[in-house]
Length: 287
Image (tube, rainbow, N blue to C red; front, side):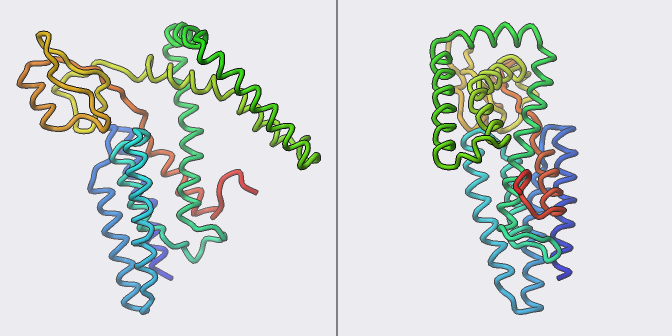
């Protein structure tokens, strides 16, 4: 169907624009996401009217509902910003059905979502490593401090135990798989997991926290500390970020700077994940 071609074209073009904007300004304009949502529903409605296939619209609505729930959850958990969540909703409408020219058996929206997460994990590790190298001495010092804490010693012992139990279960249930290289890589990841968590925590503390001028704050920025002025609390840290009225209040109170956590631009994995999904129709690394 020609409609599928238009939906894919809008999805790729939209994520390209969003990626450029995110890398340049650390923002995804609402008009990009809303444009994808409106265009997706519009194309689906026209196709449904022309062919009387109303499921084409319903699956777009279902994709929107599913990604709305997932996006809001990721936003509340502070894993994504609001722009990322809205972009996912746009993809939900556009890819609620599998394009006719893309092979595969799994729900296409699930393929895209998993591929975005996989690309995001790889991207996050690479960017985190780059940031750690930029702040080499500070990163190493803080990593050693946290690594010595008792709770992390316990976590490493637990990881060793989990890896051992997992290997024994695999060996008993499927002896042949116990020698597969994939299993060894999984066990290595389990053993390294506490170090990955510590590294991520240190990257956030050392590389992503910075003092930002109140005049440069934007709605949704994650202010990491309560703000005090003349011994009084004038702003209390909020889970979902600072609001416009809070920024106006801080400016009236003549607060100069606040401590903000800057996330990394996360839209590039959306673009790569969408392209891989459209080209292959499969989840990455899944044979």
